[in-house]
Image (cartoon, rainbow, N blue to C red; front, side):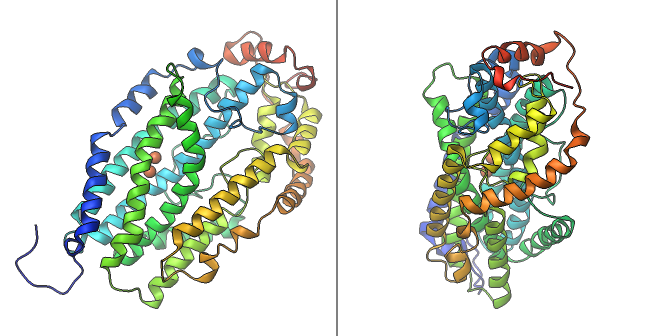
Length: 428
Ligand SMILES: [Fe+2]
Ligand SMILES: [Fe+2]
């Protein structure tokens, strides 16, 4: 509804083409909203019913293409496949908690403009969908970790939007504090400034582009299987919701932006700082997980814990040696992750083309583009030397009770045919 009064502020209705595209995207997302299906899948999830089958394509497994993968038994490979799902979506939960907050602050920043209700309604629906996504990922991830480890490994208790978004990053205490301050400041600025609000969607679009690479394949896995396990179905439902979120990121950060006046120097600075932060967050790739740009040394205690669990049954020395071989030596897994990283960098560059306020450093993705297999290996080796010095305190892994629960069954199944990975007794 347009106002009968003349005014000199930006009005979304003046851009009929963008309004139409936004309406269509919102209407379609509402029509095929997967919230009810995701809630039903999460409620029906039973780990015992799908613990023997993979949930993802073969190469989307934790530590695929590393010595651990090469030496794992068939049952252990299934565990690594499912742990990829758990770890991958643990990262998505963190990103989506932040998304809910910034959808709201950005909607507040945009709602002050004439005719922006449609954008805000779109964001409200997306935030509600994110809450369903988070609930489904948490339900499955926590059930798997409870059964396999009896404790959290990749999952974490519910958290707020100012926590480090990358759950395995290299931020020391000062940088972590500085990032928290930046996140809070961005929330405040975006809630009162339409241009900065739109900038959130530039960053969100980049993050979703990254997500689309692996998530498209995770979703296709379920689409190809008539009786796909529930976690694979969840991947598919999530991906379908997210494809609309990606459209709205594009529309808001590129088309809606044209309805606003050009940015001031301060606004452009904030926009570029946000992009720079995104480059820094994504400047590495991981030997353990293809498609998420984690800092491997931050993962060592987690992978160590996995190796000491009954399903892999390595002793302290065996687990350390396996970590070293997987993270400090070149592998097919690391090369594949590097390939995904390169694909992501190229798609980020294309996404930013045509945005006049973006600096050269961000347009050319020069921070993220400087990464290489050699750099990752050098960092991983330095990190391993530090980890090995202090790993003795992790030696006492809780021993499983004989014959108790899925973890023990898995141990029995997994050790058959995989003597190299069961050389020591767990808990020794
Ligand atoms: Fe989501
Ligand atoms: Fe989303």
